[in-house]
Length: 284
Image (cartoon, one colour):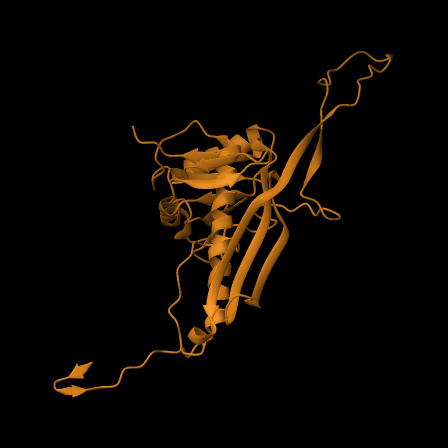
């Protein structure tokens, strides 16, 4: 580089500029639950009891009407594998001021978790219950839409504790809910509003038209997230768990240097579709 006719020194900073990733919305006990499997397994089955006949009143002084025990099995499989491996040659690491291997390891972790996050949301959208309402959510109707989604879960005799909303819906919600004076201590920041018994969480991952995941049967599914406005549900209705994970720097056997490797092996399934409600916007 020259200043006028004089060459001046150039230098590389030891700090690196951060990459951008989607926000973490997979929160145990809030948006999903884990069922800890005892011992090694590639999947598990959960029992779901059949209610049998409805109970109706009768007259006093009668015998019981016995019904045979009956249940169903819900299969959850650890069949979604997420990996990232970066090669760092020793000569590269020796020629920069920052820790190249640690930087790529952190990057690999963030990229892998982001891919896992997209797939989990695709699973929720594909296996949840689609709301019939396709009208666009705006500032004027955002409260009505949120309440309607919660009502749908309750009408299904379920519970609801969270709602993931797109950035545009969250912006509308902030204008209506976030700026009003309130004594509700649940409003702790602009990133989390708690209203109507729901944690209203902004989700900036509703931006891809083709997101893939493997369902419990091993079938590859491709899901459009770009028209999703909201997901309302109960954390126990969505299972998400890893049976294997790796976060490591290892010396390479093929070259002088190291590899930054991250891996997650994950199970994901909506086990109660009646408690995961999906709202999409479709223009006419």
